[in-house]
Image 1 (cartoon, rainbow, N blue to C red):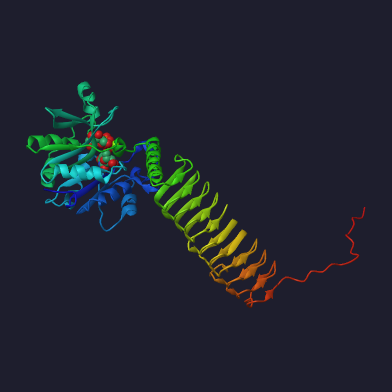
Image 2 (image 1 turned 90 degrees about the vertical axis):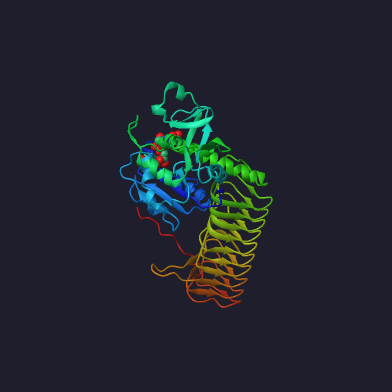
Length: 458
Ligand code: UD1
Ligand code: MG
């Protein structure tokens, strides 16, 4: 008995050009939830721990192998593209004869691992397995032709008789079969059909002639078998995927102000009592700890947000760690390398990059803090800028605990503001500011009594 945990060969068909996408990018590289279509297929296939994964590419040159290159993937070029059977032929040198071969389509991104496992299990080592589905509108698909309940062949829509076109059970394009047999069958394919192509689906009739038992499995959901041929279908699948993600979050107890208005392009992990307002986009790996609140229209990528922190509307976070109870935004920008301890406040139009800020410090308005190390309970006044870049090199600014930086100060790095130091407003700091003292660099203010404005002579 084969079980899904035993190894198989996987072939992913991704050579077609996808004419209806009207794009220079190969169809299978178009993103769904921020990830190329074919990468969804690849990642699901990896769940089977296959011995081989062979991607067939062709249209778009080396873009597909360049994008997917990984130690566990091999690539076979199909040029020209003469049909799905011809595509699988290109994989032959990579297939291990002792293991069955599972064939997947690079443009059918949402098939679940459980459906693939069910098919692989049903076929075991010696049977031929086809993932089929019954569709209300089967137009365009290959029809499954059965006799006395047994699958006899697959007829492509364009080659089908009116009676065959009335059949609602279709080929999803996902099949598994013994590899030695597959190789023999592929060698005998012909292209005398309506499309002049070498059809993979013709091997079903070969299997019947060879007395190989043919079994089928059905996915739990019809959308698992939906393919992408146009931007309209891509958009529809994207919404379907996002609806599914939103549903999972709701089931986990996350409050979504509108489950139709959230986009997750990666992995979003949420604790208890998290709430997310409308229009937010999550990319990469994002973790929201218990009690986190995300305001409207935030874009958050590769970030960890600590317990009870609040990210207010229109904030943009990337590559950042936010401590518990922090208050961020509205309109804040945290760039990669930002680490905020507990209770930090970053307000509107404040940009932080590659900086560590210790607990209870505040930068509430209009500031740039780059390449800086900031202590606890520091107050950064409005308009403060770390001048970290001389056009070639980056330098660090260090601000120690309890310092107070007056508004509109420039800290010309490398520079250190000592513990408890105060900078007067408008200071251009080019030398270290001693701890506990007031440092002011601006010119002293003077007023000139009796001064007259110039008057225009007529
Ligand atoms: C195929 C099946 C059809 C099934 C349908 C499900 C065949 C002959 N037909 O039809 O029974 O119902 O999928 O979606 O197999 N490709 C290559 N090289 C080629 C041709 C195609 O790599 O020369 C790739 C495409 O990039 C795509 C996949 O194979 O990923 C399927 O090809 P496509 O042309 O979309 O086949 P369908 O006509 O949809
Ligand atoms: Mg197709």
